[in-house]
Image (tube, rainbow, N blue to C red; front, side, top):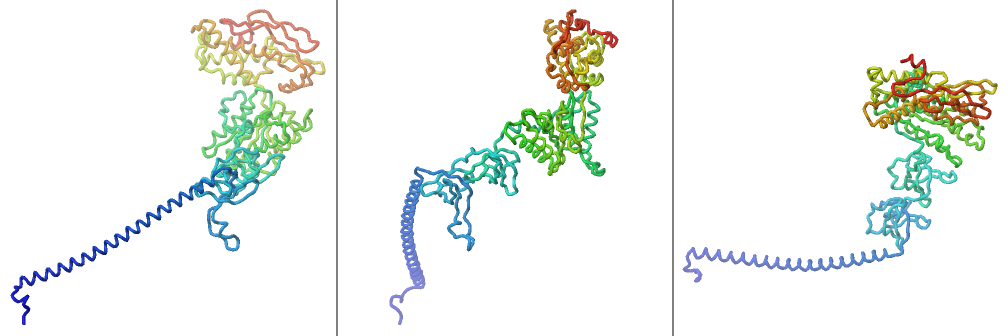
Length: 603
């Protein structure tokens, strides 16, 4: 029997009914999903409210903790110095407990060493060894200060491989110290002065003192052999003794030879001893490559002396330690002692002191002691070689002795040529007389050299009386040196300038003349008439480089008055000396360039 509700329905109506039922089921499903989403949304909202409440509580707790930490930082504070910083790590079983390796800082506080913690508000990287810090009442680091730079001044005696330093303090007390964080990557040399903190046992900072730097100059001199005149033989001997061993070490090893350890340059003052030493260093540098340079340590002898016992010896050790430091890399090092007799005089010769009894052995130990002195040449300069201790002068120490004598006429002309050049303003009358500038300069040099080395009444300087009663007259030539010649040329230049200005700066008056040079020679020696030491003439003769018998007295023979006048007299020095006949002056004026027959012939 058929359903009355569907009985009379068409197939189209039946299909629509099925679609409606399906739509209702889908709507019901969507409603259920919406109900679920609403529940989840309500749950998330509740969780969010709980999270907000938790964040608020956490913020309040952080604020409270920070306030508590800041409250812990209230005064008073205690000062401490950081020794070492320990990061957190795993404990070593059986050796330490976990609490000791959670990270800490070793400090010195009130003379006690302790391990403390740092406030979490501080940056750990700012806490370094040697820094000063502030501790609160619970001994927690609450502030990092600048490291202390002041302290006891000590000297570095030795640097150890692990970074430790051996220093010498008061009373020559030695101790091993650590480097502060500031010195961890800095190069420290033996002899450097450092500040030392006895509380922490750390070297804080290097102190750049001028004490040693004033006597040790490492810069290379700008002097060459070509700048030195009149010393051809001495320069050749220097080159054979110094340059050959350093420039040809293989040949020396092949022949079983060693470079000399030292050279003594001795002779009268002003003859070029210091210039030779500087030229040696410049020559070694010029012949070396950029990778193999040379060093020149110029030691100012008298400035090494110190009133405190042992200080001079320490300076000598510092100098040679620095030389060994440079030479250890294969660089040739020249150590130059100027005025050597002031430091290393004969032991036992001191009148009011005996410092030489310890200074001389210190130098001997440095030159050929236990430590080898390779690639180092010691050059000494002195005008009193008789006062230097014989142990220094023996072979094996200062092997080569070179006398730098006063120049002869040829050497003096060579020296004049270094200072009288064609680049100087020359007087028109001189150029007209001699022609080219080169010929004019050569003629001027020949004239002044001839006059300087003429042994006649016009160039008499002093008379020496020996203990046996004999006398000897010394002339300008006997006291000529490179320094004297340089001063003569400077005097002539100044006189040329003065004449030019006096003449109203006219071109006719401009330029150097032979007359200026001749007058400069006379003025140079006249100016020195009161300088010879008459109270101890024998000592004066030794310093001046004059050899012979024992000197009993000296008498000056110096011409006075204007060169254009006939006025002249002889200056007598010493008791019992009487006047001597006058000496004719050298006329100087326009067109006048000579005063002797020999000079007339030279022109």
